[in-house]
Length: 317
Picture 1 (tube, rainbow, N blue to C red):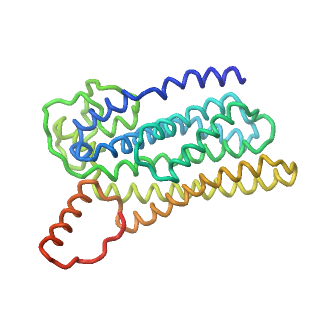
Picture 2: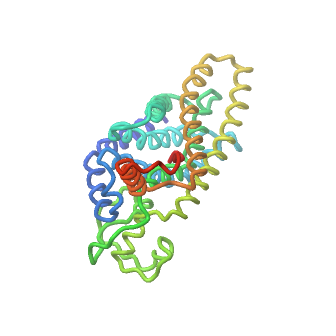
Picture 3: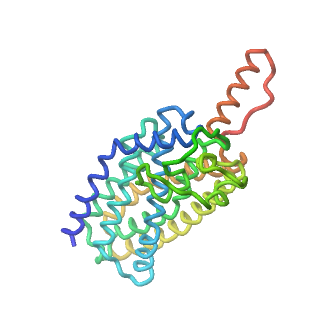
């Protein structure tokens, strides 16, 4: 079992050395999305890392759901599968920690906790009833919240763009979400306009541009869906954690439970911060694009320069 997990870790480690890949994807997104090109360079990797993480977590969801079902319902904890899934889960967090320059403290702590738990995961035998089973459940429920990462990235993408070429050879935002590791390739797009934009007919170029933008109404419902999914996963997750850890403490009095609770509370802290942001974001009518924020700031600066009184206090974005 441990040998297989070490092999999986060794196979996954090259994925951490992918510094050229984000640069290539940044170039792809800059050709497809005018709003992405307008984002400051320090934020481009943040947007890209959240898009990639959303796609990766989405691809993990079927396996993660099966792992959760086998463990919680059948009491069947497959050590090798869990170790492999743990290594894969930690990859996007590690890459974000290495490549994203400006990051909130709670998010940085969250990524560090994931890496520490991934190392512990490689040495644990899940066939034995212990505290680290709770870690598996927490990670699986976090996998289901991939829509939140998509939302965090989409708030920087505007709802408008301009066509600039006659052909498209790169995956758009819609297709890159399904193919997170795809390189530039010729892509036929005969029927995606109905899913990506309500304005038919679209040429291949304008279709690609539309897919790389986020309409305000879509942004609002994306915010609502992310909040519902995230809070539902947290409620079920935290309820199970309290039930399982309480019973385990009564039976074993193991100090590893206290250590786990101390570290996982840092992750809970980040979850609470994110929930507060989701609530405030939804009350504000959904995410605001980067270009909209820039236009709003420019208008405010012009009003101050002309001596006009401010219209009122803005809600936080």
